Amino acid sequence: MPEEYEPKIVAFFCNWCTYLAADLAGTSRIKYAPNTRVIRVMCSGRVDPQFVLDAFAKGADGVLIGGCHPGDCHYQEGNYKALRRFRLLQRLVSQMGIEPERLRLEWISAAEGDRVRAVIDEMTAQLKALGPARRSHAEAA
Amino acid sequence: MKPKVAFYWCASCGGCEEAVLDLAEDLLEVTALVDIVFWPVALDFKEKDVEGMPDGSIAIAFINGAIRTSDQQKMARLLRAKSELVVAFGVCAQSGGVPGLANLTDAAGILEEAFGDGVRPEREYRVDGSSVTLPKLFDTVVPLSAVIPVDYYVPGCPPTPKIVAGALTALLDPHPPAKGAVLAPDHALCEECPRRDSRPQELRLERFRRVSETVLDTEKCLLAQGVLCLGAATRAGCEARCIAGNMPCTGCFGPPSRVRDFGGKAIGAIASVLGSNDPDEVERALESIPDPAGTFYRYSLPTSFLERRRMEASNGRGN
Image (cartoon, one colour):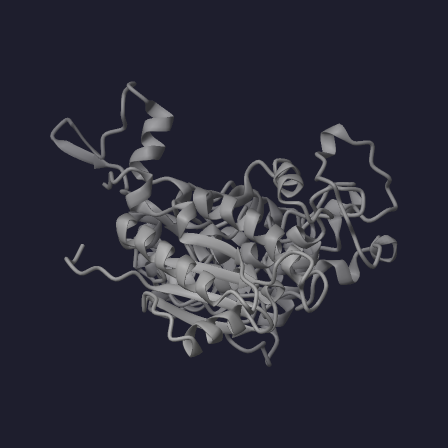
């Protein structure tokens, strides 16, 4: 592990709540760890489990999914769908040797800019402690 | 001169060989069209016979099974050199199949489980001045396409007679399909399922039920009856044979072409049909899927995005 290991976090934020919260954090000049690459999706329910697995396969050390609070989904139920998929994915990735801390789901409303900071800072610290999510490949080739 | 074909098996159960034999009398029609020059399960040709053939002299090599030993890797490369076309036959050659679940551990873990403190197989054994060797067991099972270029894929565990016959016809045709094609329809099994009309628009299941604890209706959609059926994520072409036997689809035809990771797509579909919005209830419902990796990657762990359990996490032992 290099001395200054910086984990990479891929974050899927929903268009109506969490992405706006991240925007608010920016306009409020709130400082948070620069380790997150945010991808805006229309709804946390749009986060296909394939996206999450692809992110890990391509070298992400963590994946963060942000959606509206329960009951607040712009599309009524998308965040509940995200919750069910997330819980099943958690079980899968732990079988694949990926620590549960590397995959996180958070409800963050458009008003919670500071919550974006808290979550990203906390997750970055946790992943720094865990180290890189290296993967070994087949030796046959 | 009739085109020459070869059949070979790698990490497989023999079911794909059975699938060819299941052609029964039709096999005679096949042999009227082609000469079988190598088929270890049925004919007495040796590796050195294949080595003696000119490069490219075999028209089609049908290789079943995943690659998990140095010997299988070597034979795959030999057949690739000798053949004009290589067909990955069956889901193990295509995407790892059930042997691919070995990627949840590694070679040392497998040997430990199988032999424990007992007598271990030795890779080299000397007897009467000569030595015999065992192939190296890899830590990671890979599909055929990871060791040689593959021209076509025939899915299934095993491929059904209709799929096998269709593949042969397509390959012997003067205008064969585009290289890289999966020789089966490219839509989901649900679309041609005989129980399709009994699937409700929206499902809200409390939990999944095992076939053994359930008296199942023979007409109604299995998913609607609470049985974890993967037809929605699986490629069609099997004539829904498992469904006809009142058993759920486990995904052996792999995904349609637009899906990049079978398990990921299946998880998306299956998690969606759970009814609850309450985290604790969702957890309880998920208890009814005790082995997600084995359920959603039963046939495709080596071709999934993650390919295997992290070695560093499994135990750090390699070979």
